[in-house]
Length: 210
Image (cartoon, rainbow, N blue to C red; front, side):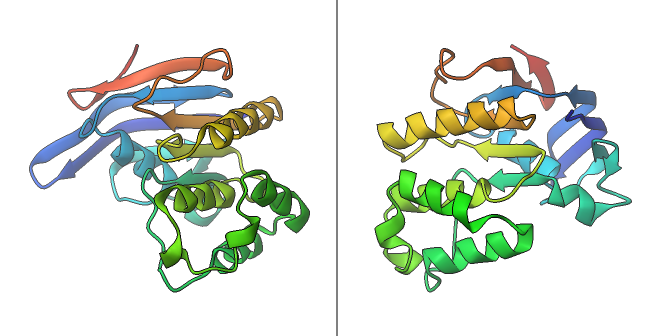
């Protein structure tokens, strides 16, 4: 069972307060964070993923990011809205890095590469990829290995309808296995495809159900 807990969270950029709330906790399920640009969605995701400093307490399944940062981060997979990779690396080089770090199954990963239609391009340099191909590569890397919490920031942008349908199936199947998801999307998510447990929005730096 997944249990994410945040307490006394505050995050500023200079004098601008982006996040400020006392408590937020999630258990197993698929959660949707709504809102437009500049509301703090990506900042919240980076806080939870352990990619940006903040004030407060944060733990996943009782593992604190303060006292056990390596163990904490090993339980989370984060895919950025607009991933940036070195243009000189190939898709396979990036993927192999994730496989080695997470000690993942190459067979399962190969199936996902094939399903997303990326097999012919994995030996090409990322600098030659279209934005849609970069996004697919980031999603492939996000699903490498077994983690507890998947954080997908705007996962639907720049991917085609077939890839979107596959992503919905992946999220649903992983959730059924006990994983949890935090998703953000400007687009409306297909509620018939994803069993969204709850939706939230950030208003005046605070998290609110919606």
